[in-house]
Amino acid sequence: ILRWKFLPSILAGTFPRGVPAPREIRPTSTAPTPEAGARRLTERAGIFVDRFASAHAAGRARLTHPYLGTLSDAEALRFLTSHVRHHGRQLP
Image (tube, rainbow, N blue to C red; front, side, top):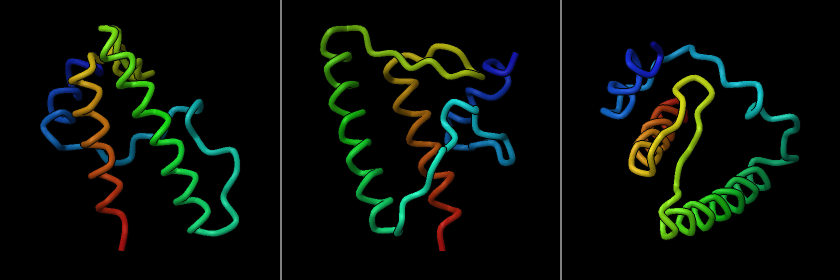
């Protein structure tokens, strides 16, 4: 039901507000400085992009979301883009 109700609007760029992050992806620690946090995020994003590109090339790129189920490679990229834009609006 969540996939049917929310995924189309998320993929269209409207991310729902107030939905809690799944426990599995909540940070367990913080970086000592914003710069260190940005470096860590950039590093982890690079690893994700490399792995996702390899999976895509092998025809097995998928992302499993705990609320929305399995997303295809195209759905995953659109979802992640929408999510980044959602958080970008929270920055000063």
